[in-house]
Image 1 (cartoon, rainbow, N blue to C red):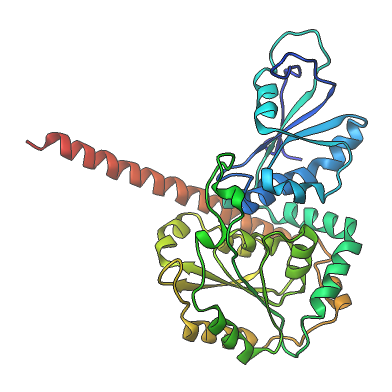
Image 2: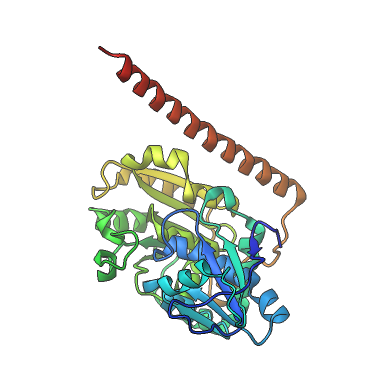
Length: 369
C-alpha cells in the first residue's frame, strides 16, 4: 500500500462537538479530488474503491474497532450494501468536527485517524487497484450478482452482441435540497432527445438491445449489467464509471455534448478510464446537452464494432468471461505510468498557460488609458 494512498495522523485523539468521549476506533476520511461523494462517480472512485482496497488490512490489524466514515447522503444505501462489519456512517458535520478537534489534549480514548486518497481524477487511475477491488466484490457478492445477471439474461432474447443503452432519469429530489453539496444530476444536466431512434439504430446491428436506467438500482445490478454487456452506449456521466465492473472486450460509445469539448480535453474521465482498463472507447459528439444524437454517426460506429463481435453468451459465460488474471504485464504498466505522467504534465501546462493569459489580459487592461 502506497504512503500517499493511506495517511495516518500522528495525533489520534479528539472529541465530538458536545465534548462527549469518543470510543476508541478508526476515523476514516475520504479525500475526493473533484466533485462530491454524494454523486455516484465520485462516490464510487473516492469512497468505494479506496475503502474496499484497505478494508481487510485495517480490520485484521485493528480488529474489534469501529470504523467511522462520513455519510454520502443518497449514496449511503450503496455503502450499506457492502455489508462491512463495524462500519459506522456519521453525519458529515459531526465527522468533520471530530477530525478538526483531533489535537485536543482531553484524557479520553483516542481514535486512529486515517485519510484515504480518492481515485476520482484520471491522473490517479490505477488498473491494478481497480482490478483488485472488482475481484474482491465479485467474489464476495457472487450470489447477488448472479441473481441480477439471471434477470438481465431474460431481457436478452435475441442473437448478436449485447448492447446496453443507458437512459438518464430525472434527478432525485435530494439534488435540489440544501443538504446537497453540488446541485443537479441525471437528465437535468444532459439527456438524449431521440432515444427511440438510438434504439432503432442499435437494433439494426443486434437483436440484443437493452435500455436501462441506473438511478435507484443496487450496486449488484450495476455490476451485473456492465459485466453482461458487449457494447455500452451512454452519455458522458457517472453511470459510465461502472466500466470498473466490465469484462474484457467490452466497447464503450460515449455521447458527449460539444459544449464539454474543452473540459473533456483537459480531463477525459471516461476516455482515460477506458484506456486504463483496456476498453475500446468511441466518442460521439452531441450538438446540445439535451439535443438529438447523430444516428448516422452512431450507425457507422456500431457497424465497425459489430463486424467481428461474438454472439451473445449465457449467464454463466457472462461471469466466467470476467478477467481472471489481475496482474498486468510490466510493459503495459510502464506504458500506463508514462501515460499518467504525460497527463499530469499536460494538465499543469494547460493551467499555467491559462494563468499567463489571464495575467496578460489583466496587465493590458491596467495599461489602457
